Image 1 (tube, rainbow, N blue to C red):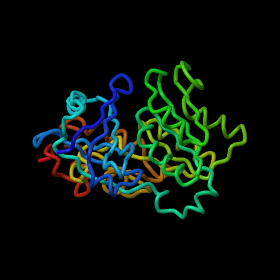
Image 2: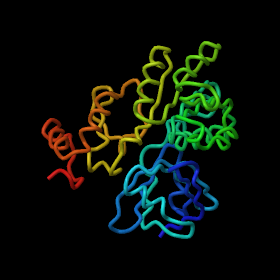
Image 3: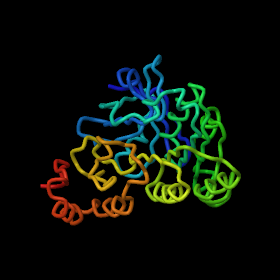
Image 4: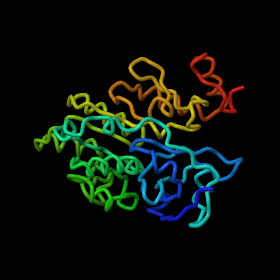
Length: 292
């Protein structure tokens, strides 16, 4: 059993939990995720790791209530436990594998949209701990939905807050802030964008025009998290990949976002899953319990 040692409601329907999971905390790296279950019959919920403390043996997760499983999660209290807390899963951020001195010479930009601030934070923190200052753009629909601003400010080189309605920070989409920074003379060697699929798509369209290599995390499309269900099937550079086992990070300029978003919509219904199975054949991946 994995005890919840801290629970905070960051904003409406978005929660932070710190969970005792010593084995996960011992070996996890930024960019990876865990799968949680509340009981032996519960739904498997994949969540990107927001933070970790190896000494305390804890993992921090952030989640938004979007369905029955996360609504039940939100009812858990400090002192209660998860039945399963499996990880670390997925591949670590590519920064973890790079030479530190080489990284120090790079100008890095992170773009976080909504709850995407949670998986961006551990990567920025990891770089900060190694003396590397990255610029960070955090976008939110409104000021009330903004999360982890104080934590991000402590580790970012420069932090830019933007809200769609202009209620806080800069006004407009994150893409406008990218354009503004480049127009002001900022140059970037790499961009990391994490957030809703539509946000990542338009960030990648812009950064491709600006000739900035871009990494995206496709955690938002994961369902099962083990490569069994096929929900996170995506085409990257013309090849079939699965976000949970091959990612969750990919070259954003090679991802077919339109296909992935269309597939997400189809996957929600039995008719859609049947159509996908017929079209995708052996690459569809069965075993999710929906596809007979």
